[in-house]
Image 1 (cartoon, helix red, strand yellow):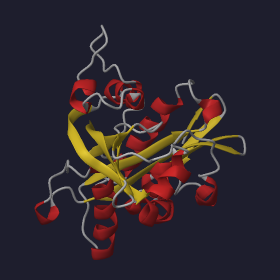
Image 2 (cartoon, rainbow, N blue to C red):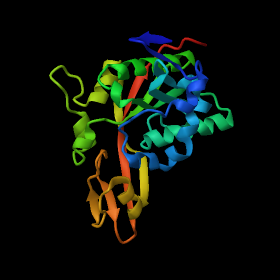
Image 3 (tube, rainbow, N blue to C red):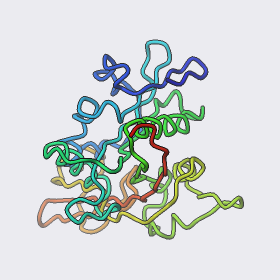
Image 4 (cartoon, rainbow, N blue to C red):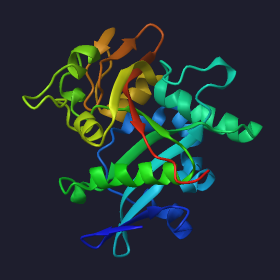
Amino acid sequence: MTVVDDIVITSLAERPSLVPRIYDITHTWPEFIAHDQVGAALLHQVPGEFPDHCVVATDGERVVARGLSVPFDAHGDGRVPTPDTGWDQVLVWAFRDRRRGCPTTAAGALEITIDTEYLGRGLSYRMLAAMKDAVARQGHDVLMAPVRPNAKHREPRVALPDYVGRRRDDGLPADPWLRVHVKAGGSIVRIAPASMTVGGSLAQWREWTGLPFTEDGPVEVPGALVPVHCDTAHDRAVYVEPNVWVRHEVEPTTA
């Protein structure tokens, strides 16, 4: 348990009564993100299935942040620990390994979400540290994070490798969320070019974004890291989100 400024951070296993409340947070996630099919099928099960790998922050009775991660076998079945399909793949592997009873060798970070009223207080650093502590207590020595650079949406047509390569004068990444990870000891490994995929009819995309989706080709959507591809002939639009693999070494505290 970590207590700073009256904010208490623990694993969900320590406070299981909070599992139903971890989504009671005002957030800035774009609507379309919730329609990734892998996430829609599995993400809501993570807090209940893997509470030892998830962390929650409260201010009094209010839930103000959540952090979700899952254990998986990074090398089983000839797997590559940093797959191109990043976020989606880690989530699928975690549930497949749980179903098969496979031993796990790593943990994968899925999200850290801070209530909008608590942004700018350094809580993201504390949540990441708490997540690393939680997976270390489960005996893992690495936390792999398919990171969503949180300022990339401002420049959706810039190639992600070029964006990731930008540095401040102090050598740290220009992107704020990547900078949090690197300052916390993480190492940028590679790009996950198809970390998350959201497909839908044009009517669905209009509902999710308020945009017309009447012309073929790339469409810049608020909150999207890259343009969404619109195909009017087939009444479909598809968003393939790239993320950045960041590796965190942790010191396991159990055998």
